[in-house]
Amino acid sequence: MKKNLILILFMLLPALCFPQNNNIDKIRQIIFPNIPDFFTLKCDLHQHTAFSDGHVWPTIRVTEALKDNLDAIAVTEHIEYQPHEHDIPHPDRNRAYEIALKAAKDKIIIIPGSEITRDMPPGHANAIFLQDVNKLLVDDPVDAFREAKEQGAFIFWNHPNWTSQRKDGIATLTDMHHMLIKEGLLQGIEVVNEFTYSDEALQIALDNDLTIMGTSDIHGIIDWEYNVPAGGHRPITLVFATEKSAAAIQEGLEQKRTVVWFNNLLIGRSEFLLPLLNACVHIKNAKYQNKRIILNVELENKSSTEFLLKNESKYTFHNSANVIKLKPHSTKKLEIKTVEIKDHITLEFSVLSAVNAPNTHPKIQYKINTSSTD
Image (cartoon, rainbow, N blue to C red; front, side):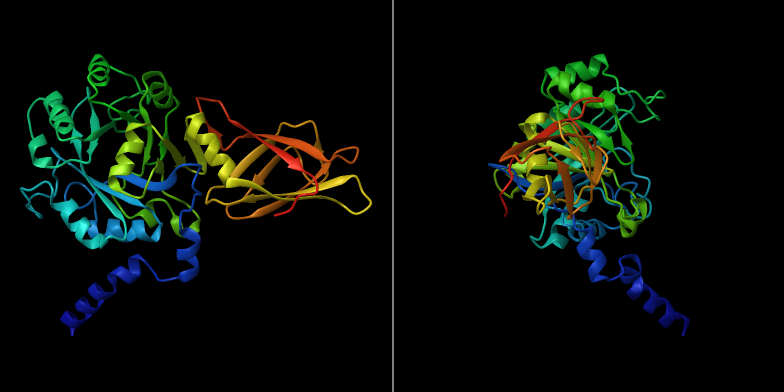
């Protein structure tokens, strides 16, 4: 009887961890529109499983990503740090990727990679699009970076603000990092890792022409760590790619075509952030109220992020203060006092829920035909 009970509980474990609720599954799906000339691909490129210091099997990472509607993930186990090796002996460091790839069944892109795990400097770095992780098991950390580059990998610096390696929490380049960047051995940097955001890392990316990255660095379960059932979300990197393929993702990363999504904050270079903002926030309708000089404008949010917009135009609103909140996948009506009937007006907003440099918010502008509708 006891054995049968244990067997039943084991069979029910996936349902207990991931309860089936179609409404929750639909709401939790991460959606961002494409921008001109590019697909917007949703990627989490730093994750762990029981094959290093994570707490789940690689198949769970695939299941979580599919529920979140991601386009690509990388399972990036620590190369040098193997706390479960006595319980899960696996001399082949590529094994987690192989299991995840089989579980994906072509429903999601699985990118091979691993985490080079060293003391500072250089600290931790992810090498993705690797051919053979085992060859990175070398004594000299710089040799590990060079081997990754030889395999055609894209390499980025993980959690440069991590207080276990930077007690002040301030991301700072060392001489070794400068050397790695100069030799093309370091191409990106995590501005967001797990629950932290670093202005200093963003400035390093802008000053050194590095790709802006954001990852979950998940070790536990996504739903629990990021409180997804209550509306939370994992951090991800949006990669603007020419097609939905691993090769196109790598090309997009190498060309620095990224925006990070973290706690409903969008972080990126203006050349990619602005097209994304304009694709997300759309003027759906604009008409004057009957016999009034009040213009009704409907703003539509076509994405999964919540926008905080500050009015920077010369007009004031009749039904709102100058800061408005636009919830995911919603429409908000603004009543605009134009003083006189106008054929065209221009609305401008500072996007407080986005940054294109430390403490700097981008602006979006809409030229509106007042008699236009969808």
